[in-house]
Amino acid sequence: MQKILSRILLYWFPLAAYCGLIFFMSSRPAPEQIPQFFCVDKLIHMGEYGLLSMLFYRAYGTTTLYKKTIRLVILSILSAGLYGISDEFHQAFNPTRHPSIADIIADFSGACLGVWLYHYIALYFPVLTGNHRLTR
Image (tube, rainbow, N blue to C red):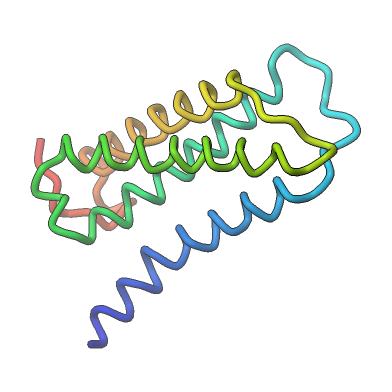
């Protein structure tokens, strides 16, 4: 029981908290000014969903999915990307925001980069991620 509780607190709670933060931030009015350099909003989306996909990867790694790396990777990318789609849908109900296909593409791109980066770190520097079960 203690192991399950610690797994939830260490791996699943950060994921749920970050999803809640994304939901909260997209409920707020759109920022009046975003820095004016090329595609900064898309880079923000990529970073945001890159981190989300890493958290999904970490959490799913505590399940039996870690035995099949391709499933772990695909499910993490899809989970983050689908959350991005639901976030864009949610923004449609906020009068100061608007949904965008370009944002969804940036979300999925960030999710792919995030999973790739986390998987690379987990393979070559497992002490940094605490994931000692992945093999090359």
